[in-house]
Length: 411
Ligand code: FES
Ligand SMILES: [Fe+2]
Image (cartoon, rainbow, N blue to C red; front, top):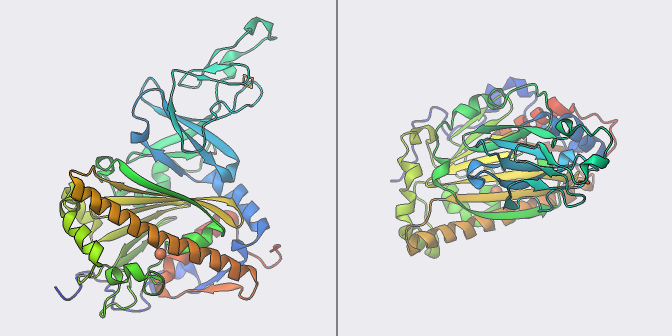
């Protein structure tokens, strides 16, 4: 094999092909840097964006049995949620706030799990059932006209898409989850996510604005320069700047199909790992009859605002980006694999995990250095080329919610 597939009508050989198709994005390639540094703009995002979008918080396999729950912080809304499976099998989310005097009921940290028969508040012992109803109050007779039926845990709207649990902080959202996801939600219908329940996880706080970190996940232009380890996978003589196979800009979300070199030359360790792991590359995901939908090698589903779902052969990744402040973001990354059938498959997974970690360190590091550069005020806009079109689209959707940047806003 020497040449890359060319059946795609939008061949990667072309230049200036994406912006041309999207006049609604406005002038190609100019993004103000103000919203990446401005506390005032960050507060606009907190008010106008985060409480009005669907947010992915976990998967149904994490809490398969009644009473199993996990805790999830939603820092942009100052909220902590309990996500729990009820006795009826339904998954619900509640504010982790006691209706007596506001204490946290579960003291687990964000991401931690547990299993209970009921939730008892550690402060005075108010007890709530798995469906959130206040079921027991110590010394109840001593309260005046206590309306227990009105003092259940405060619920948060919850819905499921392909096994992913989403929440919405607004009890009366503009759109259902299905409407919100739109076309991107149909592209992965029946993808066998549940067949790969094992994951490796990395979490990091990166000292940059969440949109700066996200920028590196919306283009592949940087691979040839930044990711030396991944260069042979993404860069060839015929496609030296790793133009993407395809990009689709949806209403709020975006889908990118990355180029992968047909002549990929792995490193020595990589060669051994890929040989050992061949059978895991043939695993259930690849055998799905829907695989054709995921054509090419690495597909990015960037689901607004902070959920990136990457699908590759035999595995999938997901990233979540949770802003902690204007220049600080919690990055939670998980790589899901099928259960290794033998030691060599395990070795392959371990190799892939470490290779991904190295790439992610490069992405985090350059994002912090970019934030520092922006802060100096030396530049006031990002200049984008055609293959970075998804960055412009993403920032336009941010502005659709939080409003346009104006120079009167404080930096
Ligand atoms: S604050 Fe929870 S029982 Fe008092
Ligand atoms: Fe990268």
